[in-house]
Image 1 (tube, rainbow, N blue to C red):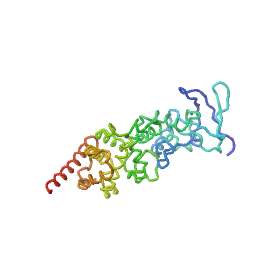
Image 2: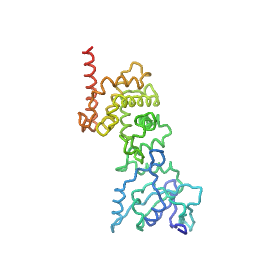
Image 3: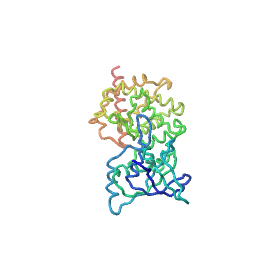
Image 4: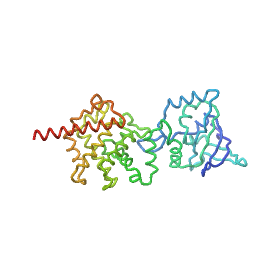
Length: 342
C-alpha cells in the first residue's frame, strides 16, 4: 500500500489533555486501531475480552438508516518510529497522517466492540483521539469511562485498581491477597481466577477475582487478623488455608464441575470457616498449612460439597449464611462424635 492515511481533524483540549476530534470511515479506523486486551498469562494489556455477539449487535444497529453513536475514544501512543504525524492546517485544523507500514497505531480506549466487526464498512464515525497517553494513563481513562458500565467485568476493574494503586496491600488488602493467590506458583488457585481478560488456561478457571476478594474480605472482617498482623502475613495464612483445602479434599478440589468447593458459595463459606479456625488458634504465629490440614481433616470430608447435595442452588447473602451454618453444623457434630467415642 502506498501513501499515508490522512484524516482532517480539529485539535483542542479535553480538560487538561490535548485531543483530536474528527470523522473517518469505520473501515479506516478499524485498520489503524487495536484493542489492548488483558493477557492474564503475562499481565500485559487492560481491556476486557472481546465479545463477538456484542460487536455484531452494534454492526447491525449502526447500519440502520437512523442510527448514530457517540464518538469513539482512541489514543495515539508515543512511538520512537515515524508512525504518525500532525500537519498544521491553520487555526485549530490539523491533518492526522498515519504511515500504513506502521500497522495499528491507535489504541481503542473505549470502542473495541463498536469497531470489532466494521472492517468492511465505510460508514462515517466520529472519534476523539488522545495524543500520547501512556498505557497506564489509558487505563485510568478506561476505568473512568467504564467504571459503572453494565456487563463490564468487575474483576477486570479490580485488576486495574491493583495496577494503579501505589500501596495495594494497605489500600485494598483483600485484593492484594486475592492476586497473591492467583499469582503464586505454590497456590492451588494459581492462574485459576478469572480476571476478565484472555488466558490460555481459560477452561480451567474456577472463580472470579471479584468473588475471591469478597470472600477474603469476609475472612479479614471475621478473623480481625489485620488488627495484629500485616497484610503480607494475612496473605500467608489465606494461602496456607487453601493449600490445606486442596490437600484434605483432593477429589472435590479437582472435580470442580461436580462440586461447589471452589466456586461461589463454596469459596465464601470456606473463607468464613478459615476465620473460625484462625480465631480458635492458641498461637496465631503458628497458623500454617499443617494447622489447617489437621483442623480440616476432622470434619471437611464429612461435608457434602457436591452440586447435588445440601449446598445445591444456594446463592446470595442468605445462601452463603445457610452454607456456613451447614458446614459449622457438620463440624460441631463431628466434634461431638469424637467426644462420645472418647
